Length: 157
Ligand code: HEC
Image (cartoon, rainbow, N blue to C red; front, side):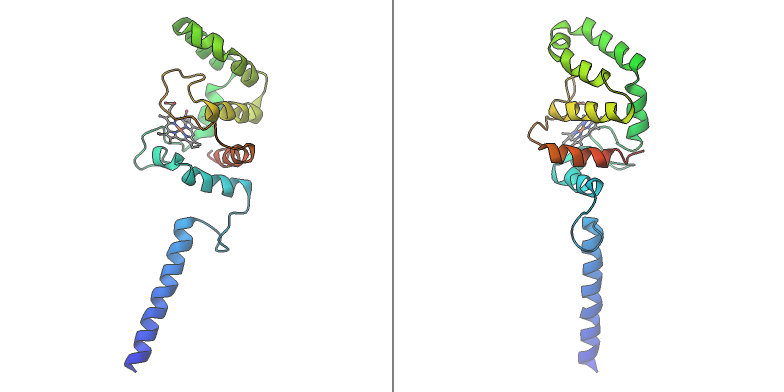
């Protein structure tokens, strides 16, 4: 009797551990992310983004990324982005001239495509349109990793 109680106890323990592992790693139980956005969510943790960016509360050294897409869309409209760039041109003409081709790339697109292009530039060098920024470069990411992170951030509505 005692022995079977012990077995039950450990059995329940093992099930709870398994549930905790699946919960912590945020997968569907098969252990592997499937969609690009799921891969991106995983990269967000593995690349250390989560150590600076909370999503919807908690300690966050960088901006909390909840509601990112509407915020970015508002910041990247033709008028808002051009006036932001104009003020940078006055403040730091040298840096502005250096990064000008990247602004053209961003402004040459529209809608969701503009967010994608901006985000790719932001990962390559977060200071390209924010000269005093504190986020580190992610220039080492492959194109596939950038695509997956992009799919993930596009879910932050
Ligand atoms: C060391 C801390 C740190 C790390 C690590 C970091 N960031 Fe950032 N991030 C920042 C800061 C600070 C800003 C604000 C702009 C700046 O200072 O460059 C920012 C800005 C952003 C923004 C724009 C947010 C907004 O509301 O304007 C996005 C999107 C972003 N980071 C995504 C990422 C992703 C994706 C990663 C991982 C690949 C990452 N960050 C890693 C600190 C960090």
